[in-house]
Length: 202
Image (tube, rainbow, N blue to C red; front, top):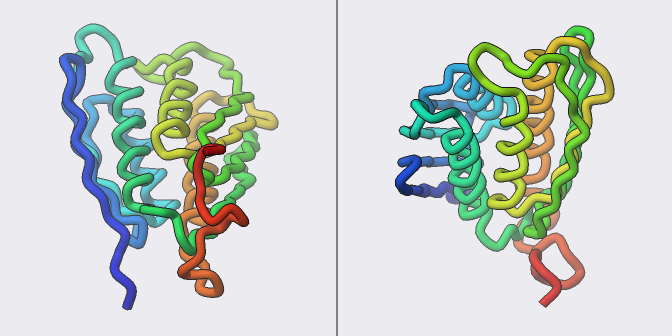
């Protein structure tokens, strides 16, 4: 049985203190605490539907606003996912998902290329869900794309309920990540690129 791909990351600044552990070959188990209830709920969805085990504990300057904790949690999580992939040999690399949630339909497509690029075509009918500013979700996805080395396209095709739109984005990310990071048994030792390496143009 192949060793499981795990990583741990700690990120400590004057604004946030975050620890993350991931297991890409997990069962979708999670322990998440950011101090932001709705964000916790979305990270739990991400874990459950990607089958990536996630233990993420964050303390941040929530007395100011939710921005730093939201963005930094994604930076730390993305770094852990990238570290767990290692040289990315054997991964499926690409993933896509089309996720319905009641009246909402969202498409997420990604390439675990180690070349970050981010496209966000999502609008929200209202500025807040609970106490959380909906604009912060773009920041979260962009930070994850950057630190995990993902070319990531997120498109809400249609939808009327902001909660449903956000949740479909996270579930779409989860299903696309699940495809991209899984080991393809037909190329288990090979980096999925004709260059022989995933990353920049150097």
